[in-house]
Image 1 (cartoon, rainbow, N blue to C red):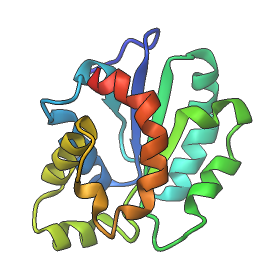
Image 2: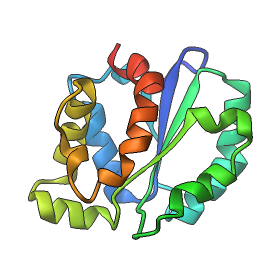
Image 3: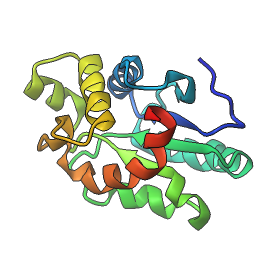
Image 4: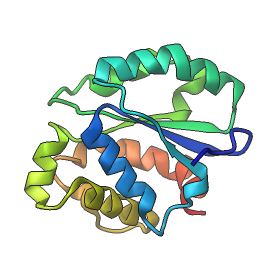
Length: 161
């Protein structure tokens, strides 16, 4: 589904197929206003996500002030991964770009939770819709807490309002 780029909306750019499936699970949750969310094709690696962000999405975000983007990447145990993306952004766009993902890789999370990727995404959406315990509390996702807190005020009204 295509979003109306002149209204507030969220784009999700996944690193790989596993992250895309998690995003699809988020999209199919009944809690989510799917008209305001679009999941892009996987970029093919976190460096390609970074490149696509710089080359394609930064110029588009400068045109469309209602656009927010969520980058879903594997952190590969790298504490500096999020800052690498932040450093690539113009200051005025940093509040509209979010970087989330599994501390290692999605396969580890799928194995630990013993559910399919789309079900993980649905649980994430359900946890975002209410302010309570959720899959975000999992040790493989816990490092996202500051980003989730930051996202709540910007993305929550667009997707759950």
